[in-house]
Image 1 (cartoon, rainbow, N blue to C red):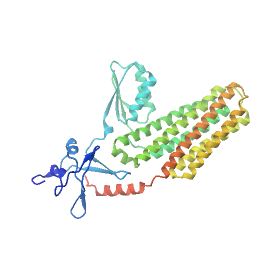
Image 2 (image 1 turned 180 degrees about the vertical axis):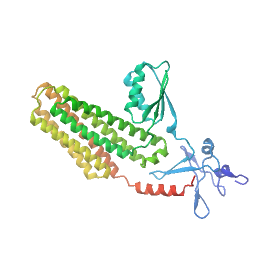
Image 3 (image 1 turned 120 degrees about the vertical axis):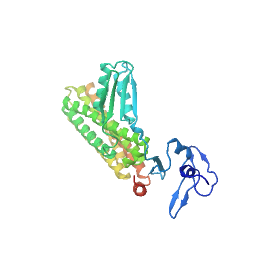
Image 4 (image 1 turned 30 degrees about the vertical axis):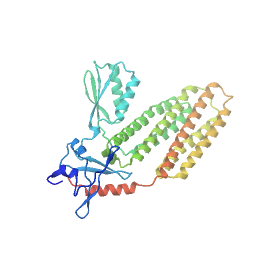
Length: 379
């Protein structure tokens, strides 16, 4: 407008006055203007600029999104994950309930957690907090007082690519499945205990991945560092959850060792269970492969194989009806866990089919991000 200069005038209008653009549903409409030979300009909502304390000369960053939109944020803004989180707990809280609460706070992505009680923190509560810090990836005890423990995330947001975390989880789950069946055959309690303990490793990787995705959903800058789209983050989070569930079923198979005791297992049934376990593990590997390659044909093969495994399970169940109670119950537990593992793999296969029909946009996203980065002013 005449007589106005700087950002204030730039926000309201650029060039000749234009008809008002309607604002509704939280969206601010702005017309594209052209200045010079090739530069396009869009004005910013005045309230947004003033609310963030911005002014002339401040730098804004743009992140292209897979849906074609742009995310805009000030270069000087403090990321949301840098905030300190106060977690008020009670010495009367159940240990398991307190541990779950701390996991939820961890997933929220705050690098500083101050766990505080209204009175002096007792030894039981303090031990739960210490155990939590040892179990999770990142948190370390930074400071302790009579009423509080402060944990700091020393790892940061993206020390490992999310696809690498999922691959690592798959390797661990596959090994747990193999060892669980080995413990079942040999009735080896030491192998069974090792499988149970390794389940914690799978859990901590899943929680760590969930923390990364949660932080990315909250802050576009973190999402940009992941080199993944939001749908891809969602897919990897689902894959991680499925792997964590399959690991739980490997634990359940291991726990049947104690139930069996010295009860002999007919070799014919044992061999059938091992064959089914191998097929369930193959279903999982093929499902992840079909997800990575967007291979609909292989995904359908996984679903068909899981359905075949269900038919085999019913056949084995009919065979153990006449067996002794302890043996029948243990075999039934193993059969159920193998079937559930196979059907979790079909969930991944269905996700792979859904992803395969999506229009590929990654290459165009990368090119667009590169062009925006090249055009950004140096700081």
